[in-house]
Amino acid sequence: MLVALIVERLLELRGLPVGFMPLVAAVAVAAVLGGIWSGLVATGLAALAHVSFFAGGAAPLDITSPDSVTRLLLFAAVGLVISVLTDRLTRVAAENARLYRAVAARGEELEAVVRAMDEAVLVADAAGRISRSNPSAAALFGTRPPATLEEAFRQLEPADGTAFRPWASFRRLPATVRATGRSVEASAFPVATAANRSLILVLRDVSAVREAEAVRDVFLGVLSHELRTPITTIYGAARLLRRQLQPDRRAELVEDLLAESDRLARLVEDVLVISRFEHGRLSASSEPLLLQRSLPAVVARERQRSPDTEFVTDLPSDLPPVLGDQTYVEQILRNLLTNAVKYGAPGGPVELSATTIGDEMAIRVRDRGPGIGAADRERLFDLFYRADTVRQRASGAGIGLFVCRQLAEAMDGRMSAATHPGGGAVFELVLPLASLELDEAEREPSALVPA
Image 1 (cartoon, rainbow, N blue to C red):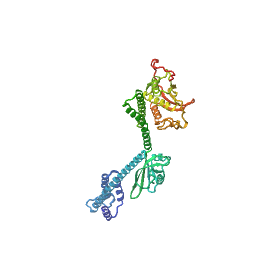
Image 2: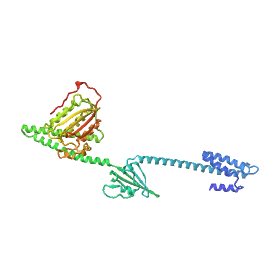
Image 3: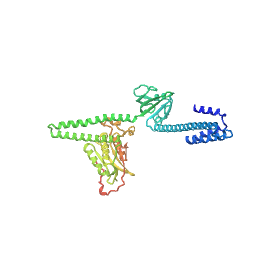
């Protein structure tokens, strides 16, 4: 309103002068480039220039002339208003630019976060088209993420058999991805505004959790079954020993107690290894070991547990030292020798040998049983796996060979199994040699020793 009145007054004064518009433009440029103070200075200079050079008349700067003073004041007022408005518009434009940059930066941050998420994220627009997805979505669905929300729901099979409701909000519904078989928890977050709507679908891969739960359930079932026998035997024998028994009967019960206690102790050792492995805490010490000195003692204990089985050892006296953990090596050999007695030919023989191959040593345990089928060879070291050929021969938990492999790998070694050309199964533990020279006096000789 103020600007209109000022312009109207200027127009009443002899019409719009020739230099009016260039001077107004100069004031606006000064305000844009230098701010309000530059605009004010430019206003004063432009007003003087206007009344001095463009107003016309013989004495354009005559301050006694009411017409000159009026033009001067009106032009100054117009310049002031233009300077203030231009300054405000410049500040608003700068603030808008800053906000735009901030929003763009926040959008880039959000995009980076979504791309880095382990959960699969799909964003559907109002038409149901997938407008945005992250790499986890492509990995979860196999080759590429779905193109539409309808396609995404078609590829998800709810655990309870009910269909997903499009554009509905739900949290952590269990489902399976049909293409990959992965187990997921699905959550949907509708976003509605006055002008548009979208839906964010988040899929959390819980396959590892479901597999761990299944393994835990099987493990608890197997463990409870395997613990029941030794605990029942120990409990029953202990109660019988409280009675007055004949010496031979008492000695028999004591042997049963020792045997079942040893069995229980070995089972607990294997369970501890599995627990450490599942929690990522399975580690081994690395020290030089002379197997020709430690392994005969392991064989002697197994011979005592199975007196009807023939054990044969072939451990040359000049075997070089290997790197490993003494406790882990003995636990592996105990498991292998026990399996050879359990699944081999009745009475044996069970053979233990060690040979050097390059910078490694192979320790082998051979039985005279039915051998290992080709289909079982790859899965033999899986947790809870037992080949069909041995299920009917003896009971077991299916954890011993799994424990052997984990212990071997913790020592930078490896385990393998095969059928011997001459019959029976051969289990091989390979360990790295230690770069350590020992005196002959420190080596304990051992030859081919029959039971």
